Image (tube, rainbow, N blue to C red; front, side):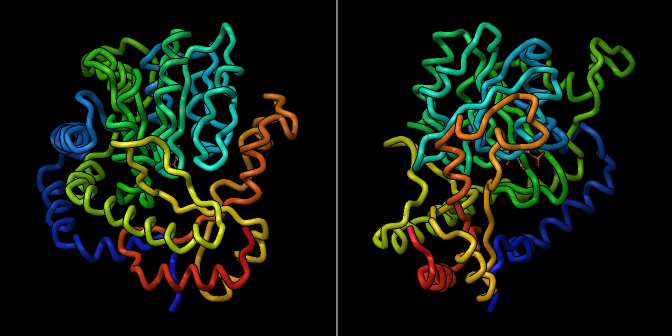
Length: 369
Ligand SMILES: Cc1ncc(COP(=O)(O)O)c(C=O)c1O
């Protein structure tokens, strides 16, 4: 039997009837843009995740742009972010006209290194964007202290970290704004593109909504030139069904990660080091293990029909599109080295314990720490 990397069909099967009813409700009421379903979902997501203000967006990339713009960040400003992230983090920053500045990660947890962050600050730095990669929270106590000392906005990229928490506080509530992706494979996934911004207060929420919707105050009164980055009514409605199961699905991910950890750690493999103590929660969007012979391991898993991935094989400092930023090879050594060793194994709530055992025993046939 083959084992997929993510199984969206299994999840769909379990909520099929509810989804069909909701889709037909949207079609009957025709609230396709803004309105009822976008508002309903925003309230449910804020309630379950934590946070009092926020609004839906068209996707996680536009959410970054909209969040930064709402906080007044743009041309001439620098936004410090992670070298090990998905390219969208950088695109969201660049779209505002601001310049991304890359910092290294901590080996083990893969989160933003506060020392590297401090070293990257300049007079132009306006914001820090930690990325809670793989669903593992960054060290938000140290990052928040640096941001406070240097009067920087914090805009968390929570695309992979729905319901994650650091020392009792949900990710997404540490700064002026935080962004989420509901790309189908995410911990909470739409049936298309969608995203979200959690905001510090009602004023930032008002600006986020304005920047996501043609910069308008009224239907034909436009205060700023913005764009169309709104959430789709149909996606919001689908997400309001799915959000009810997010806690349950997240618990299953963590349970699966515990099984993986229990099998891999005693064999000497380095797995994600969970950040924070009591009250912290890593939500395992991805299950990542480090190996020294990755190509051979992937080939072996492929042969056994077990899917795997690499998140991400090329750090931002080595991306051709960002060559102008001028990062030389070896400047961000921890994240550059990690990119050569990380391997993501199948992870989704419906993955069964005996499937994990099969994955790990196949992995152990060739993998070297
Ligand atoms: C870390 C990170 N940031 C941003 C994004 C962008 O989200 P989207 O694909 O919804 O635009 C993603 C998702 O792919 C991501 O993983």
